[in-house]
Image (cartoon, rainbow, N blue to C red; front, side, top):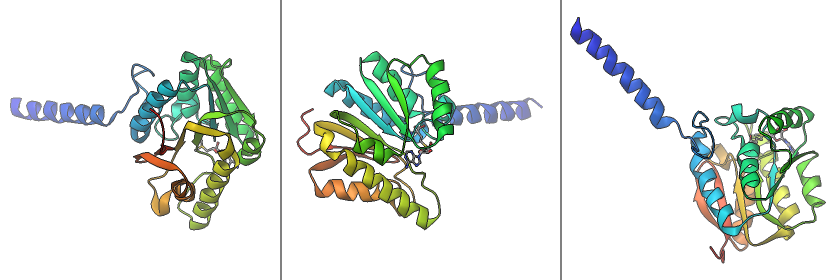
Length: 220
Ligand SMILES: C[S@@+](CC[C@H](N)C(=O)[O-])C[C@H]1O[C@@H](n2cnc3c(N)ncnc32)[C@H](O)[C@@H]1O
């Protein structure tokens, strides 16, 4: 009987340990319970770079439609980078074409008290970026959803390329670009935009689920 109980206890302990190892929090920056999983390390590195360049203007395409609850699935980047903006006297513009996504994200922005540093714009991202006039320190590309359908994949990849081209002239020598959902069949959201950037003066710093790029002559 004792042996059986010991085996059950060990199994349970192993299960908990497995969960803990998989859990990738951004603690202490974000509460420990939020699991950023495949984006945790690239978010962390991005924020290190944002610190270094003293970023002031940030844009995200595709807003956090599930608020912080979506940390593991969608990334919850509006809240992560919004919180970074609040702590660093910066401003985040997040743009989304869906009224529902904008409303859901706005709820979380209110909950997190980020209204002074985050504005969610209801617009097609390319149209928004085309009209954006300020210099941009960091742009996070994560709009047009990517799925298993090859036709959708191409549309998503073309859309992300158009986003980059629309904002390219607003980027400076130390600007940072992060692209989500890249390590997926047929190259993910970043395929065309990364090919385009590598033909110019950009280099990859992280090539994982997310791709992080800076200029070849990035000074930090
Ligand atoms: C994956 S979610 C964004 C997740 C968010 N970045 C996060 O970290 O939680 C993709 C969002 O892109 C939006 N979207 C799709 N097409 C778009 C477009 N053409 N312009 C702007 N937003 C778009 C969708 O409405 C959806 O809310």
